[in-house]
Every structure is written in C-alpha cells, then in structure tokens.
Length: 104
Image (cartoon, helix red, strand yellow):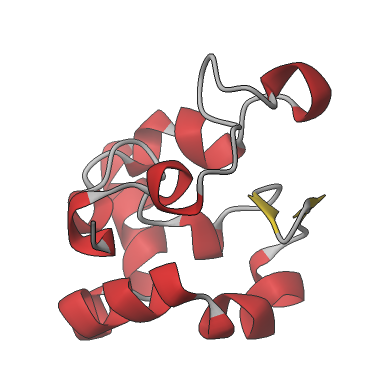
C-alpha cells in the first residue's frame, strides 16, 4: 500500500497510534493526536505532517523538532512518496498555514 492512502503510523508501523502496541512504552505519537493538522495533505490528524511535528517516533527513537529531524525525514520513503504526490503543498510553511487557519 502506498503512502497516498495511509497516515504515517500505518505506513511506518511504529505502534504509537491510539491503542497501538508501543503506546505503553512511548506514548501516543503527537502526529496521531494533533487534531489541528487534520486534513493536511489528506491525512488524519498529523498523519501526513509527521515531518513537521516534534516528538514523532522514527528509526526506533523519539525524534526532536522539525529542524532536528529534517535530514532524516528527507530520506524517509513515506515523506518521499508524499512529496511526489503533493509537491509544494507538503512544506513546513503550508503546514503552519493549515494549523493557523484552524485558529482563525
């Protein structure tokens, strides 16, 4: 299944989605809970914005800020597929605009 039909936790099988197998150990991923990001690039909550959300779980560890993980995300197959599908719509600036529009 391609990234075009999944959220990050489905694609990466990280186990940090609500009721996921790693929630007891690491907690629910902020991407899975960020309701303000719902709909960004067609995702559920932050499921398509994981590159821009602090505290996601990739590579077996909890990640830092967008700037901390920028290089790793650019190497991620999920991110690459989303970028190919959404182009310029998948950017930290578009993500911030999406979040800000929820507060207007």
